[in-house]
Image (cartoon, rainbow, N blue to C red):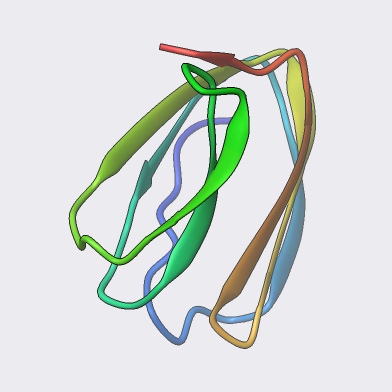
Length: 77
């Protein structure tokens, strides 16, 4: 329950997520994301891009500066 942030070199964590909003802010470097407008996975490297999603539930894993999200009912805000 509640909010938390994941920053560079965050300690490893696995946590359940409840219904709410996930806000992703990209850092420098290449990343991939799903572009709902074009129904395709895109690649970009622009830092500071903000992606917000409403989710029903899910899980987050943080390990070695990588974040994995497994969610149900995601809708772009």
